Length: 188
Ligand SMILES: [Cu+2]
Image (cartoon, rainbow, N blue to C red; front, top):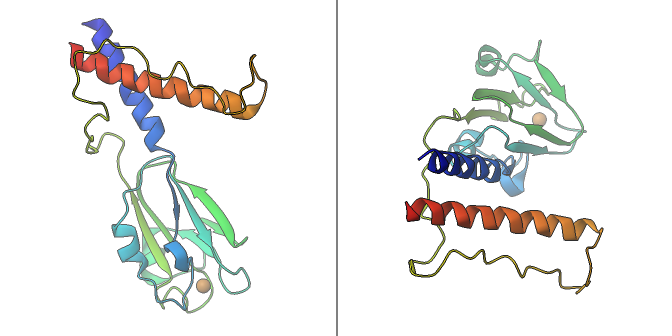
């Protein structure tokens, strides 16, 4: 029983780690702008943000910037005391806590024109829908990890010090762990 709990916890950790990797470009192809009439509220409502996700503001820094502000400042487009200001035109911000994150462009008039964004990062314990495990329904096969033959295409015979090889080994280990997690869960 203890083993199963450990396995389940390990699975959850792995899946959380995998799901943390999302990077969202604000406004998608339009970016962070006023001229495309992007509804950033609508844009944000189509996404589910998790702690660890990264949002990327891309814009022409001659015309725009990014200010992180409080809710009150967000509502009134008050740019007098931003929490932080970003001005590179290629600003990536990692979401490190849950709740609402308020941003707008601090150039006069732009927030009023709709260049403002309210991101809601869901609480870590909020239930995220778990998709079905990506394994076949063939439960008769023994649990042999399918990743043992993962070899880089270069065909290097010995252990290679290259980053690509080590990354693929890590990926293979993650896949093997995930598969074994699901197999273990199904076996009990
Ligand atoms: Cu602007």
